[in-house]
Length: 335
Length: 284
Image (tube, rainbow over all chains, first blue to last red; front, side, top):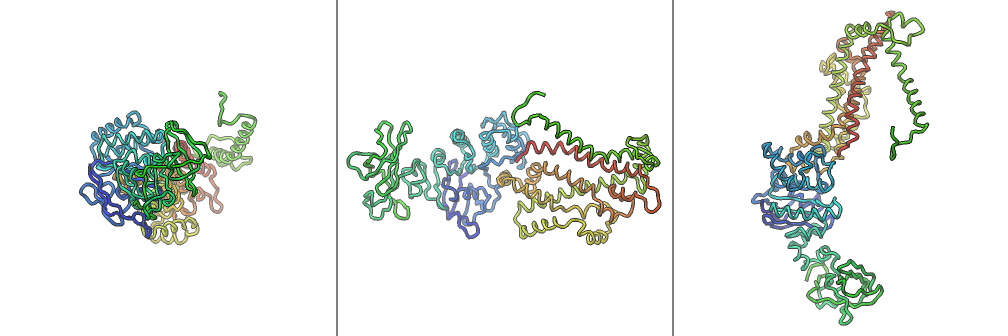
């Protein structure tokens, strides 16, 4: 168990800068999710912590040690890969034991630790099988087991759930969270799925084009996005962006005004803005009303299922509380 | 047999027809071998007196023991041992060297990596025959004429095998190497523990091909072995042919031919199982 610190970490491949300087101090036992669209550098960042990529500029600390020049095996980390990277010719037991075997752990202890991990992950019946004889979820568990048996200071997860189907993903998400809680190991978890980020993270790093746009607790990030990108990326359906002038924002610097769908309301009087209903989606507990504004922008209103649904093609007025809005300048930064 | 559904084909007249065709083809190919076998079991006068016999005679043990123990220039048993050493040396040597060079080319970044690969690839285009004179010079210069090392080393580098292993290694996901690195495996450990077991079906396939390649070498052993005790069996058969007015001892020559066929057949049949198993549970 250890803290992890990144100090102005940068990465460039040749002349291309991929990561433009990330600073973060991660507490012992904290679960950090790095989230962002593909190509934002989130995996590269994780791989630099793992030692699979060199650090171009800056320093990576695990515990008290600067690990920039250490091999992955000397960093006291364990990693779970997107495609699991299980050794196909080894049994589940051997897959989990391989790292310990290389480290020269006594046989008895290897057996003990692997069995303990297998019990934790409900893999006991499968220890003799080969990876190809397992289902996707079981392979995923083996990959985690391989990480657990080494009792590392830091877990690194590189999109571990993206190869699973939707239902299994939800289940494994929960298991990962519980496991991390139980073991209390500092974890870095990369994903492009904002739901995973919201549900798993103690704190999350929202990355955009090689920069950390915002670092914070999921609900903080959701409620107070620091950039237009974060506002649009976190939350489903995403935040509505209206042109500030059209929406009547008071601040002259504001270019865009963002409102979460749940803060928007269809109203008969005191409308802040007019819109036309395109279509409605009744999801049971709630209804999503998709509207087109006067300038052609689209917006979504999330309302309770008990509220009457407008018809398609209706002209409606929209309103929202001022404290529910977020203003962004032309560069996308929060005002 | 019970009626099966799915991908199993229907057994109509086409089934029997193809089998009849295959059996005829088989008999056609097998007939010369049968003749060779018959010739190896009869006596010299019976062979030279037309028509040639089509059924085995009673000189089987006589001819074969003569071939194996005394031969014509050298005992065939000895020549077979030479061939075996050469074929195994070439097969193992080629596999070891090409595995290691493919490993280097795929997993390490070093200056001239591409150049080396293309140099290796280029040698694919140069068969032994093209470079045989300079190779002979070199081998003679090292004093390796009439030796196992002279038989093996010039044929041991294999661009084809290197290329095959390179292609296979490139299909192994990078994450596997990275997982091994995180697990603490140094490069050679990764090679030994993970890459090698994963390539074992490729190795088996190559072994079959390369063993036969080594066993069937003719021109090279013919050039560098002048001492009959270093003859390999394939070229040894040719050496048994009489020069001038001598009478050829055809039963013994035919017995030698049959004996020369046996080891490759054994290798193919015994490795076939591994081969098919490898194809069935293809692991990636």
